[in-house]
Image 1 (cartoon, rainbow, N blue to C red):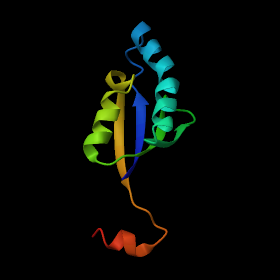
Image 2: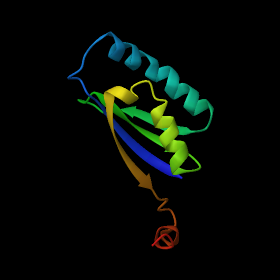
Image 3: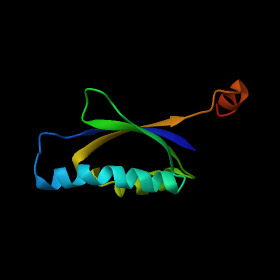
Image 4: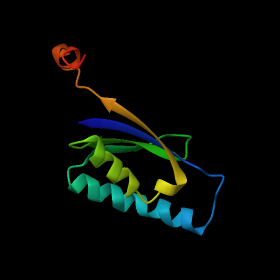
Length: 95
């Protein structure tokens, strides 16, 4: 299962802990990539946050990975399930 996760930092609560959490995100992302759980990650220009594409086995696994994110307590997450469109039958079979 693939999910696009858009996350936006709550910059209304600045402080040392938020700065530490942001500093940990690159290391967290590299670990997820090495584990095969994260396909790619992007910074969204002009925003405080990112767009990451996760490849996981279940909704529960994604939920756990998001909860383990260093910025979990400082961000808002929008989770979008992705379907492969290479073959339209794969999209229609889900309906």
